[in-house]
Length: 348
Image (cartoon, rainbow, N blue to C red; front, top):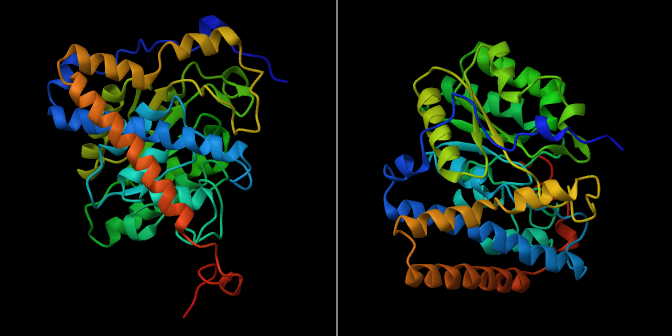
């Protein structure tokens, strides 16, 4: 088993001069309803995944099951920066981004349960989903493979004269692959409208950061490609949103890609089959105390945005959305075996 990174080298806090302004200043630039919407999607991701974990241990979800616990601020903050016609290339930790771009909670549960109502109509499982009609590239299991695809999508948009931006998520382990290098380099050379969001959760499965890179910080790699890089606290949804919004504007203006390193910790296993005993208990406790949802709730209460009444109504809405979505998925039929090849290969 690979050893853990020494505590003095871990990204517990972000001290880069490139860090964004204070959260209070950022909050002042966003209307209250936008802040509450971001909290709603963070809570919804956690609630849907929590129900998914229960379904998995009940044996109702085939195959593996993954969550993005601890990643909610990154997912929501970045996805909220996109315009309606922009494109997304997410991964398995980014459930809220799928929902924010139009996939319903019912479709998510139908995907989990391999029902006809899921985006893949039961032909693939868990989070291997997407919908090109909604601008969502289906998730590719091989990490970083989506980066060169995202670059190609951005090139196609430019050639068509479309002012669209492509945002893609990937993990720290993805940066060690050839696909990541080729995709980032291609996007940088041709100044393509791509936003590169690195979810640095400190472990690529069980591989810690000191076995992943010799660099002091992943964001330092941006300079090698001639593009700007910014590091933010991945548990601060407003810090992520501000960095992503600036990167989207830059990409749409023709200035090319930006690398955003969002620092957090994956507080569950790589999948539910992984007991993550390789993560030091003290590290888990440290980051559990920095839960991104709890932290954002406390800020919104302190700023007078999240009243007790609004809080209760939102929690009821989230719970109802989960129940309604699961009921819709359970009512969806299982795929007809006679159609198993439909939609798998190109059809006339």
